[in-house]
Amino acid sequence: MARSPCDLRLLLLAAAAAFIYIQVRLFATQSHYADRLAEAERSENQCTSQLKSLIDQVSMQQEKIVALEEIKVRQDEERAHLRILIKDLEKRSVQKLLDKNVVPVAAVVIMACNRPDYLERTVESILKYQTSVASKFPLFISQDGANGAVKNKALEYKQITYMQHVDLEPVQTERPGELTAYYKIAKHYKWALDNLFIKHNFARVIILEDDMEIAPDFFDYFEAAAKLLDNDKTIMAVSSWNDNGQKQFVNDPKALYRSDFFPGLGWMLTKSTWIELSPKWPKAYWDDWVRLKEVHGHRQFIRPEICRTYNFGKHGSSLGQFFEQYLEPIKLNDVHIDWNSEDLSYLGEDKFSTKFGKEVASATPLRGSDAVLKAHNMAEDVRIQYDDQEGFEQIARQFGIFEEWKDGIPRTAYKGVVVFRYNSSQRRIFLVSPDSLRQLGV
Image 1 (cartoon, helix red, strand yellow):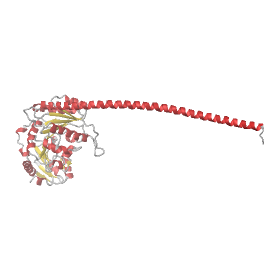
Image 2 (cartoon, rainbow, N blue to C red):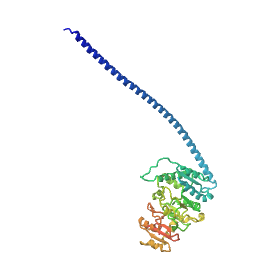
Image 3 (cartoon, rainbow, N blue to C red):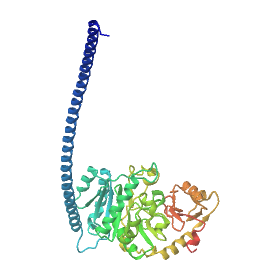
Image 4 (cartoon, rainbow, N blue to C red):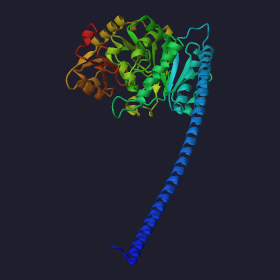
């Protein structure tokens, strides 16, 4: 059946409406994608700009790295040149200090760090007596670290060779809470002694610290002691210090003793001993390490009755430990002894053991809980036996001497015997272990 013209017009209108709708939708879609395309182009342009900026920054950093590498190379070359200059200056300085006609007895090194006022006091005390024997005892200052005031103070003394130990590596302690200072000190000691014994080839070295004053006969004492070190291999080192050297416990400026306990605080050792110790030197607490029996073996140390050094260092790495009780009252010898005319053969191991054994055996034995009280009322030498460390500490506390032990040895002891004077008199108090007399051959 034929469609009417009206139906055809309706179909055309519907088709036209559909076409227009489709066109509108297409236009809207095209506009949306155009906007997204424009946004994408803007993002791309921004990324391109950022990438270019990054490339420029990388290029600049690369140029800086190249420049820094060139600076490092120049600095390395300058450091190498400076090291050569320093070695040459040290060599010339040492050569200037040494008299070609005099063989040095020992190099003297002052170990310093960050106390310029202490260093000055120490140096002035040393120079008072060292100047006349400078060729026998060339003087060094070894500084640990880069404290400018200490370095400037050290360089003021043209007659002293300056050495500097700078270690920038972080300190790793073996136990939590330990003071890093003890690790730094041990490392500094090894460096300084390696330099003096190996680099400069000294036969002996005397080690002082930057908080010490010396006695008038300090250098004579060590010159005479050098012969003992050379001739008696049972002596590991010679010290100028007595731990029980407080005024009330000393009397005789000529008295010297052998000791199984390393005193430190102003001491001398030989190159052969250092060659033995250097490879196994500890990371920290070097002085307590030397006191171990496994380190010193059957060797002893020489110490005086009256100290030839005085330690005024209330402030330092040990934080003033024991200063007021034990260090401040120390008596520094003020009598000049001509040690080179003294016969020191009695300090040989056999002679000393025999002589000392007789002195201990001849002292009046005191027993009982009131032995210390009895000792105060005696007019002659006395000996009091302690049974163990606790017993020793109780007796030592009553007299006021050092109570401390290290590796089973009381401070200053020889064969378990600790000897000191009573109230600055000639009377001696001997504290003896149960085995002391047997060890002394009595």
